[in-house]
View 1 (cartoon, protein in one colour):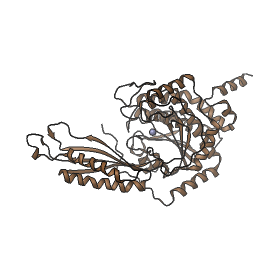
View 2 (view 1 turned 180 degrees about the vertical axis):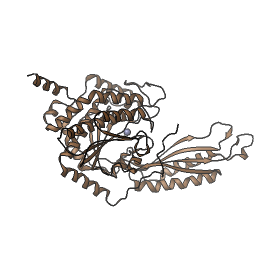
View 3 (view 1 turned 90 degrees about the horizontal axis):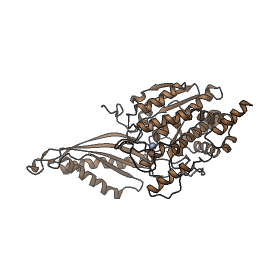
View 4 (view 1 turned 60 degrees about the vertical axis):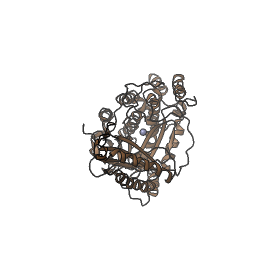
Amino acid sequence: MKTKCLLLMMCFLLSISLSAQKKLSKNKAKIATSVENHKSNLISISDEIWANAETAFEETKSSNLLADYAEKNGFKVERGVAGMPTAFVATYGSGKPVISVLGEFDALPGISQKAQPTKEALEKGSAGHGCGHNLFGAGSLGAAIAIKELIEQGKIKGTIKFLGTPSEEKYFGKIWMVREGLWDDVDVNISWHPSAEIKADVQTSLALVDYKIEFFGQAAHASGDPWNGRSASDALELYTTGINYYREHVKPTVRMHYHIEDGGQVVNVVPDYARLWMRVRDTKRSGMMPVYERTMEMVEGAAIMANVDYKVSLISGIYEVLVNRTGGEIMQKNLEILGPISYTDDEIAFGKKIQEVTGKEQVGMDSSIKPLKATKEHPGGGSTDVGDVSWNVANINLGVTTAPKDTPWHSWAVVACGGMSIGHKGMLYASNAMAMTMLDLFENPKLVAKVKAEYKKRKSDEVYKAIIPEGPPPIPTN
Ligand SMILES: [Zn+2]
């Protein structure tokens, strides 16, 4: 009687709906229980990463929070992989299949925000989790642990890997992890991203390349002897003017952005130094490369006009995501089993307030499960270094609602939701959906073969070549 009561209680405690629980296989029910058992720890890890809000390659506390919890749960953890102190690999089990799951944890500079539905910095000028990577890392770890427990109990055989992948927002840390061969023995990789909807993500992303341009001139008094000056910022202005004219003559899928990092310091000195961060994107790497080359040629033109010297330094570049629809279909089935996320009245009010403040229709969160979408040839949108992983191993992507519908991304509003229960619910949902999809792969070798076959077919004879300079990743030295 006592056990029955306890079981019943546990049933009601689970984060997923009762109707979903009824549809679960024995092992999937074990996953739901595992996620539930780790729920409070996963939430506090996510909240700590959220509050620390560490940026590119400086995510020491965030990386340790995840790596420590993996270690505590029996994973063998290797820290500081691929030349990045905050990158790590946590492994459990042995033999085939080898399934990996990605965990990001870096924040974005300057968008600190309290967990409230109106804009107010937690710490003015500080970073914030405007892409929800605090949820990303902790949610993926929850999925990895659920699989680990099934291997431990002898329910499935194989290896689970959790890869802690730093600096997604700035330098794209996964590229160096790919170069290190960290997915060479992996059969299928799985990943998710916080979103404003729940979807088995079968859309690609944009390829991009980042480089810096420095101009070197001759300083002089801006009024006293300007004829002695050769202005580095003149070259910078001429260059960006050229780029802005060039926009008219590129394909509509191309995007070009720049950030002026140094345009001179004061008004009365002809600047002898200027620096620009330049980015080129297109929906395919093959379309991006010629534009990238053209924008590099233009640097010389600007330097000639301003009579200055220049230096171009490649930072890194990423591939578009290679879609895997077979994997997407497996994920879709699990989303249909799990169903939508349910929200409390307070959460709905929180979401609507954000929509009111950001000028959106006040409809709250969208967590409905829609049919699997067709894969678009040119999807638009952003870029991710998951792209590089997806050209080296079959990859399955998931998006889960962690913010209200139409929320401006990379903004205070996403930070706000990631630090409270709307974000937490999405995170735990992702743990369940990813673990259940991985379980399908562990239980069915034919599915693994099918996912891998699609990967091979889509990759075809394309030879992957990372767009990064020789040498170590650009770890800050201070
Ligand atoms: Zn992101």
